[in-house]
Amino acid sequence: MRIGLLASNPDLPSNQRIMEAGEERGHRIRFYDVRQCYIKLDAEHPEIHYRGGRLLNGLDAVIPRIRPDLTFYGCALVRQFENLGIYSLNSAAAISHSRDKLHSLQHLLQQGLPIPTTGFADSPLDSDDLIDMVNGAPLVVKLLEGPQRRGVVLAESKTAAESLINAFKSLQANLLVQEYVKEADGKSLRLLVVDNKVACAVERQALPGQFRSNKQHGTSIVAARISSEERRIAIKAAKSMGLRVAGVDIIRARKGPLLLEVSSSPSLDDMEDVCGKDLAGALISAIEKQLGWKRRLASPIGTSDASSNLTQ
Image (tube, rainbow, N blue to C red):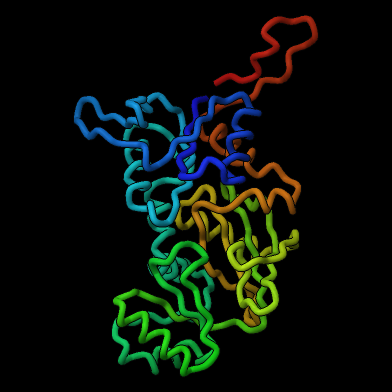
């Protein structure tokens, strides 16, 4: 198959692993910088071009890994591929949905999935009641338009929370306030869901002095044993948002597991290292399954065409 990896940085370990996995399975996989792709809208001859005028209409599938600040253009590009009948591992609609944090939380709640108590308001005049809504300080303040795992601040006191909320609102920034789950103790689960199955689960532990675990702030990561309920929540969250590949973040609270976020472009390399699984290969396998691509068994010794091991 001819597969395009739509991303921004070919040197990211996750992107390199996807390229390697595609090649190992005998596919022609190429990296395409989202910003270097451009679209021709035409009733008779719609096209997608890459820098230098290369036509991308002949691809069989694309794997979109769209950077948060390129969501609008990246989704427009993925939508064009879909309009041309080219399969996208995650759809433009699902990616767009996952990037709207408020909409995502509202949708997850509508599906009966548990999240931390969350507040949202427009006016700084409502900050006192907003803080009380989420059981007071300490609480977490999240910018709605912030890049993934950034724009998240812990306010340890009511005064600090009021100052943060008022400062962000004076800049006309949309934000959420969310209850702080103390018993999580800086730990969170990341479950990788591929094709409605949990392919890997890890637990991240924030370093001392940090309240959340992520690459930007430093973290330790270990393989995690998850409950059937955590597995169910992750699969349902990804499926309900239309994501065939998703990173689902969960924290363990006294009242049970709570969903934090669902990512459409999860990191793979750190999870592969911890779990010892070919997660990049699982993405390629999901495409093969969707497009009906079957892997031939190795040819018996002495027969011809042994080098050709794939068929469609």
